[in-house]
Length: 302
Image 1 (tube, rainbow, N blue to C red):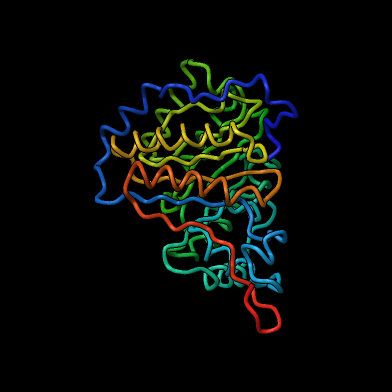
Image 2: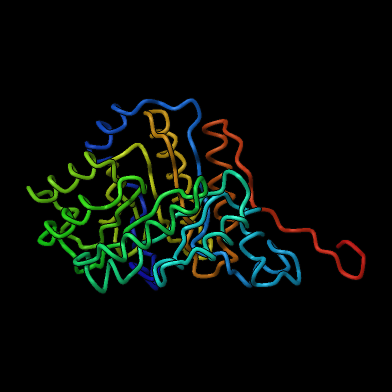
């Protein structure tokens, strides 16, 4: 995730903002689940540096999703941003993952960036029909808006959301800075998301602290975290996130999706293990950690 990335983070205030007042209202209305769902993962599964570490040595490209899904229980699926998957791909992905694993596919850029949500009914239907084929392995789709798509474009977004298939769980990621400034339009926009049960994506990235808006519109939190090579601030930020997520879970949060972005993919598993450790300590929920795979060479284990 290059959006908001800075070469120098020495002057960044990484503290989490206080919650938007709307968050407490949303969680207060939520029916508290017996056991919340915590999904933590990465944006890609074709992680070649993991071969011989988190994937077995010699693992082939076609096997990587299988091995990824044995390490994590969710995937931020960026591949769908570039191509609407066909039925063969959907079947292959579904067969590769175990029960309890969920995909979070990003809407295709032809919808969000090329057509800017206009006259996008056909590709939206094709996309939604495709991902519904994932069945119980479908987590939540998410719409990433272009950084130039601002509140003045709300009528376009509103129309698109009104026509979006309600059977597909959806989150929206705002990027234009004016979405995070209070106005009649933004109030209406977030109210509509609440009414339509559409989740807001929260992005934690160094160069755009405004997108860390801390405003939930459903009892679901989708967080995209951009780390910095396991710099000490990565760990303090993750500690703060563990505290905040625990607070939200205590207030009625149903589901967490937390995606770890690191420039070097080898840094993602240790960062997520740190977050899992803190969350488990707070919540008492058992979380499966990613582990390096025991490797066999010439019949010997090392």
